Image (cartoon, rainbow, N blue to C red; front, top):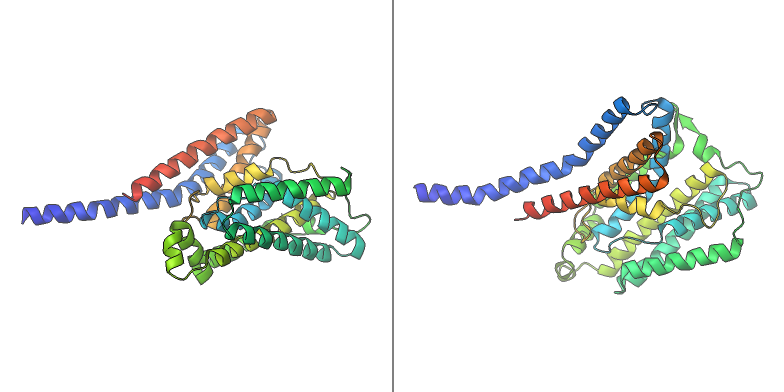
Length: 329
């Protein structure tokens, strides 16, 4: 009897341990975000002011939309895009140019999204055919940057006299439109990723490509879907960013790519694929932006900010990786 009880205990314990670790992994990031905001409110002058929190939310909306959109790519086992900055700049320039030509910011937004989706589908076709996603997106990003720089000759692009600022300034309850778009975009991405067939296929493809293929899942179709969703996010974020700045230039947004990748990784999405959540990527973006804001308020220069945020990201990613490994034993 004691032998049977011992066997049962040994059988149940790993499952219970895994459940506890998965619980910790799921709630570590939200608790960390709350802790960072609480400590900063006490220790950092002007952090807890409405104007500063509003600025954090606005900046998070741009990084967050792209991070949420890229989560499906990482979950599918295709790592991440290294052409984020140049693609977002292109979307912003198209938004401004079309808005100026048509007199409509909505037409500019539509053009930015359509072009970004087309580029996303193109990359999805290439990666889905078996080419390395990192090399593919890096190459596409370089081509886009080169074309933008050549076409604009490094000049600043604007929408002329057309009012595009309302996309960034319209607000409800003093919260601007980009924040609401970010929340809505995250909710839609969460539903598609967690509660639809294509979302389940994306998870399975990233977890085990061979099993997914044997189950009748098309790696190419799933990859194209992931890159298409990414394109939508790039188009929306590029237009919103351009509406905030009222202008765009080829060399803008130099640090955006690393901020987005950091947000996805801090959000707990497995680099190898199969596990991740758009909502956690959104929280990761909030954490990255908040940390940068805190360091800025403390007067740290850009080098220190990049160094410290990078160190924090490494620690969190390693900790989440270790927890994930332990939970699967």
